[in-house]
Structure formats: C-alpha cells, structure tokens
Image (cartoon, rainbow over all chains, first blue to last red; front, top):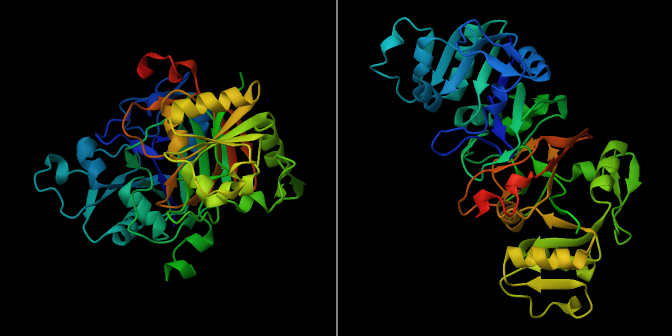
Length: 211
Length: 211
C-alpha cells in the first residue's frame, strides 16, 4: 500500500493555505517565478516555474501519486478541475452530499464519499493500490492527520503572515496534539521553504491515543 | 540603534506558542534534551541543553539582547521572573494597568508601558541603545510586526500540531498580510527546526501599507 501524504501548494508562516475569501496571494508566487519549467502531471495545462531545488523536492515527494483526496470546498472552488485530476489518476471527494448537476460526473474519474474521512481514505488507498494518496490540507486533511491516517506531511512555507484565513490543519473538534518527527528534508527555495515530515508510528492509527 | 527581534522559545507546526491553558508540552523538549549545556544570560538558573547547532543558532541571534519586551500575560505567568530579566538588562511590559502589589517593583529593572505597542517599542529601544530588543511573540509581538516595528522574526519550529492554543502572531484586528524575506538561516536541531527571517523595508514602518 502506498503512503498518505498531507500537503498543500503552499502555507503561510502562520499556517494558512488561503485567505478567508479563498484567494491565495502571495502564496503561489513561488510556483511561477523560477528558472525551470516543469509539471507534476501530463494533465497540467499551466506548467510551474520554480528553482531547481523546489522542482527536485516536489517531484521526489509527489513522484508516486495515484489518487488525490480533497474536501468539498476545494472541489467546488476548482469545479473539480473540469473533471481532470491535476495529479494522479483519480480524485476522491469527501462530501456530505455529492453534486447532482456536475457536468463531467459520468465520465470523470471522481468518487464522492459521504461516509466521512476514514471511509474516504480507505477508498482512496484502494484506488491507489501501490501508489500514494495526496491528501489536501484543510479541514478534511487535518482531520485525517488527527485520526492517525496520514504518513507524511509536506509544508511549503511561504514567508508571509496572513493573520487569518483557512488553516492548513483545519480547526479541530478537540483531541490531543499530534507529534511528528523532525523534518526528513529541509529545502530552501525562492519565496518558499520546503519541509517534509514523517508521522511516527505512535501518531498513526492503532496507537494508544487513537483507541 | 539595535534590532527588534520577534521570537519565542518554540512554536508548534501550526503556529502556537502555548496551549489555551498556557501549558507548553512538548514545545520545550528541545531545550532540555541535548548534549551541550549553555545559557543566554548569567541570570539563567536553569541552563539549557541542546544540540551544538541549536546553541550556535540561538547564541548568534540573541548575542546582543539589551531589553526584553513582553505582554502582560507572560509577565503574570512568570511573575516577572521574580524581578530578574532572563535576558538583557531590562524588561518592558505592555499593559493597560501596571501591577499595584508586585513585590520586586521598586528594585527590578522593569518598565510598565500603558500607552500601547508603539510607545513600548520606543521605550525598549531607548533603554537598549545599540543593543537589540527581544520582542515576545503573542498578541503584543504580532501587533508590533503588523505595525511595522519588527526587524527580524525567529521561529523555533517544533514538529507537533496543537490544533488550538495561543498564536505566535496573535490574533489581528485586521490589516494586510505582512511579507517577510526568505529565511536567512535554516538550522536543523533535535525536535526543533530554526528559521530566521528578515522583515524587508517595505514591511516596516514608513512603508506605504502602514500609512
């Protein structure tokens, strides 16, 4: 089984992945300001332009993505990317109610899961097989981490302080802190610093605090 | 004039310097688990034990502290460290009302400023002279950053996700995002990652967005 990787394109120094109105300026500046052009997927219509260091970090982390798992907010905000997953072959959407009038629904490789985060992760991992699941940060991703369902956390930290916004780790309903390991990778980019964390076994499902 | 440095002993991966009840576990683990013993000041009763890399980073950043500036919460929580500044020669406390019955008040090198953050920074810098001012993160420190009064930001990031707690940057009353530079130093410790940011001129007092 592949890994579950919690991440976002970028996070502010104070932990926000978007403003309250879902705008992101200047979080995505690092994705368009560099010297080398690349993409994570053949579906990417807008290639990225970053430093070599950022490209190498991102390509290593996301080399084996099979499935993306997202919340309903990101799905609605991107309109499901028109039915084409931006990474991997399949998208799992966690939602209370699947969209009824989404045009690409029949043809698109999207699965809507209404039974919560645990069921969504199970579905995503089944679809991914040996490949990894990219779990989008935010309310759903944070919940997955707190429920012990995440193997790695990727933070692309942009040097800006938002003050308010949408939190990378979501807003918890309670529970104990989640301890991670020290970063296994630490990479300086341009307008971004990349950190990759492993979630240790004691913070994953089956550990005493999850019982 | 010295620099104003915004920092805290530690910050969680999601930006908290303490839990809601002011406890900090496990944020301070990195300060006691290392091989080398050191202190930032001759007043330190409890020497720190960290890696060499962490000691070198901290001693370089805090080599020239003349004055600490703190909010009323930290003052109350530590009872003003019994009247002895843990770093530097003087402490400036931002408060709506100075304590009336604080025993060391007459002898201790503490100044209580009731006219807000701008006045407190001015007082601290006057007292510090050529030396630096260590501005404690939290509500007062975050306000100082947003008001363009901070030169550097130190983040000692501990790999733990709190979910809730007391924010490093405080809770803003509004305002625009504050852009920093990329980290000028990036140091891996044990249970901590150190990042040092410069605040660029356009995010400091006098810049158009502060007008």
